[in-house]
Length: 367
Ligand code: ADP
Image (tube, rainbow, N blue to C red):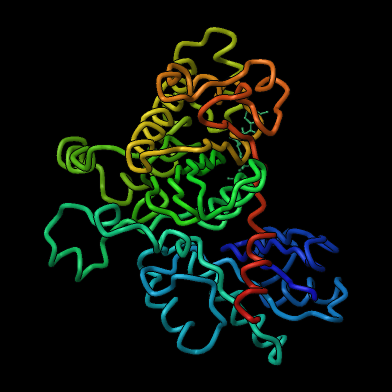
């Protein structure tokens, strides 16, 4: 059974065609609408994809949709009501949801007889209990404006926590994992028996851990202060906190490899950026340990998590009292389990595969 997975961005479409768990085709159409781009518009981009791959035996198209608000707790077959609901959520994800809607509309037009499935980044976190999702602000304002923690990277946290249980040879339903997705965007998740019970991103993918260009958690007064005292507009502040903050803001580079090169060379700004990045991870690991009560594994994934032994070592340093320890040689070699044998908490490195998870959730949704 073949599944086509589409990740439609504002100016790009990433696609991957699965046959079972095997990838039979994949690619990226970029700079859509630009003079030297790969396609004139999203319609042309999707037609190009469909013309280039063998769609025989295709059972469904799975679309990555960033924001499902509190409407969607799992991957859902697309109909007009779903499209209307995702449209209503555009104010919560103004950059991402319109692109996904375009992808859905074009794919429905080109493949009208095939089920289309929306797979939400937020859905895995629908199981977070109210005390972990609600902020202590005016309840009426929060209700009216849909202000709460939704969380993101859900397909990655779901996939990686399940893979971790498999790696440890334990049933998912009896395994507690803290997953650390450290890519350009970064988030932590506490997974209790296969269900998300806490995550670091909030209403948007801006909160929580330090990221490539995003600040992660800050005191909201920073915004008021920059507006009143620095005379910056709300848009300017948003741009600064989302594109000029994080590693970029502290070290002048958003790529962890660059930050680590400068850190190794003794650059003070890069050293501070690295330390702030790792300390924030450690704070979340401690917090989620307290939320879970018992932790079976801490798992690193995504670009930084999979490839930086330095970040793994520093962010989990000093936690041996919690049973969290790293074996330096295993860590350096990037083994799947990098904790010493017999440790109370396994520390794992598991490559994420969001597209495969989207394909599997699509399959489940149409079954
Ligand atoms: P995205 O979130 O866009 O999918 P990735 O998961 O690919 O991104 O992660 C990108 C990040 O991973 C970048 O900051 C990059 O510097 C970092 N990264 C990749 N390889 C390494 C490495 N060997 N050491 C440290 N960081 C790395």
